[in-house]
Amino acid sequence: MGFLSTVCVFFFFLGVKVYCQYENYQWDEDYDEEPDDVYQPEFQLRQNVDYGVPFYQHPLGCASECFCPPNFPSSMYCDNRKLQTIPNIPAHIQQVYLQFNEIEAVNTDSFINATHLKEINLSHNKIKSQKIEHGVFAKLSNLVQLHLQHNNLEEFPFPLPKSLERLLLGYNEISRLQTNAMDGLINLTMLDLCYNHLDDPMLQEKNLAKMEKLMQLNLCNNRLESMPPGLPSSLMYLSLENNSISSIPENYFNELPKLHALRMSHNQLQDIPYNIFNLSNLIELNVGHNKLKQAFYIPRNLEHLYLENNEIEST
Ligand SMILES: *[C@@H]1O[C@H](CO)[C@@H](O)[C@H](O)[C@H]1NC(C)=O
Ligand SMILES: *[C@@H]1O[C@H](CO)[C@@H](O)[C@H](O)[C@H]1NC(C)=O
Ligand SMILES: *[C@@H]1O[C@H](CO)[C@@H](O)[C@H](O)[C@H]1NC(C)=O
Ligand SMILES: *[C@@H]1O[C@H](CO)[C@@H](O)[C@H](O)[C@H]1NC(C)=O
Ligand SMILES: *[C@@H]1O[C@H](CO)[C@@H](O)[C@H](O)[C@H]1NC(C)=O
Image (cartoon, rainbow, N blue to C red; front, side):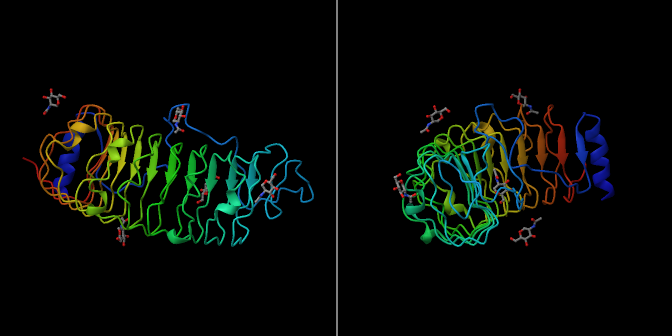
């Protein structure tokens, strides 16, 4: 530990903020720096709020189990209602909030008229992969955001609409990924797969590079033993914390010139090439809680470096 402090002081002179103790930081699902054309819902209401107009009849219709605010008629709120099935979604609805229910299945019937849907939030339910009717999401050709985190999915959902920009699948049990499952997702900017059961073979030959707009990829808390192959060169944020990755191939980051943040704490990194992090856009690097023994090159633009719990000695 005393040795580590020496390393910290040294790096500080280079203008890098080095975190030698564990510090909690926020890895937001949403990045502030996203371009303006990324879809944003018109507004958000807080969960569990009594909106106070129980007998209001929406002129275009609203499922009786749900609430459609008069001022925001394209949104339907059905969250926190102990629902076991998805209500029928009227044709004019663009955002449907179904999080925190007991929904087990996703059937085409509920969505039959809902061709204008842009956002579906089905997080915190009990959905299993085989209970998702084939093609139910793919038909929604305007869908840009799909929240399925905190469910019981065992398989990466397939097929999905090509319009999708943000796909949240964290906290499931995903251990299967069809070869072409990601192929059509050309507009995806954010993919969250943290807290699943992904391993190396699942990511082989999956053509992730075809997602040419992907900016953020979260693969934390999975079972990876090597760096994910074939990532798209658009990537800016890569999260790989708490896997079992032990090395980084020599030219791995050549294909990722835009990388801003790399999070790799809680892995098994031991020997890495001295220049591996010589990346001109890298601002944040977290390699805490690994087994690194030797110092490595710190790029000039780096602002945040996390190094705690390694075995680094000065040279
Ligand atoms: C779909 O729309 C048709 C025509 O407006 C209507 O009759 C039918 O009940 C709707 N179905 C659902 C499931 O909402
Ligand atoms: C979707 O549900 C999650 C809870 O899992 C919540 O944090 C998020 O704010 C919801 N998204 C929207 C746009 O309401
Ligand atoms: C992808 O995004 C572009 C730009 O927002 C849009 O014009 C295009 O229609 C989208 N593609 C699909 C398949 O939705
Ligand atoms: C890492 O994952 C293991 C389970 O695979 C879990 O027990 C542990 O709490 C996780 N550690 C962190 C720091 O997330
Ligand atoms: C870092 O990369 C640049 C080119 O991008 C190169 O000129 C420089 O020599 C490299 N520095 C080290 C220490 O490898």
